[in-house]
Length: 131
Image (cartoon, rainbow, N blue to C red; front, side):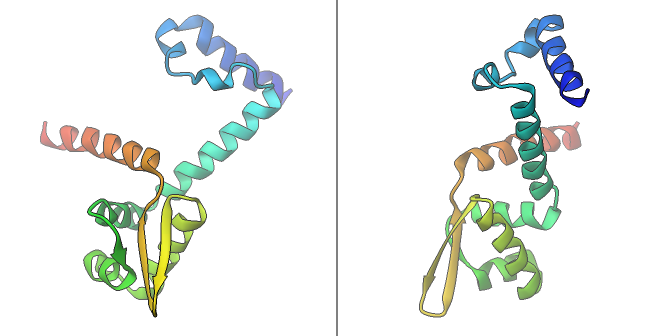
């Protein structure tokens, strides 16, 4: 039943709204309802990871390039434990790259697509705030 509902909703979006079909990635057209469920679950996990304001602040800081954990900590105004937890989560998700030089750990944005998504949403929110 759940798979039928997902596929019905998915196919309904495509057929009812031609503009919406442009938003649906062509890569998904050959996926089964069960595979689409996996896609929806992973996308939800991705956005859940980004739903934390501290993580968005860290990404904003790293937009300027590679930074050490201490620099991120200072610029974020947060504790080392908190910053390290968020950096680790973003690194595990493949969003950040990490390298170690001596005892210093550096992070940089690895996934440019994630950066583009965040920048697009931020630009939209800034426009809303300004108007």
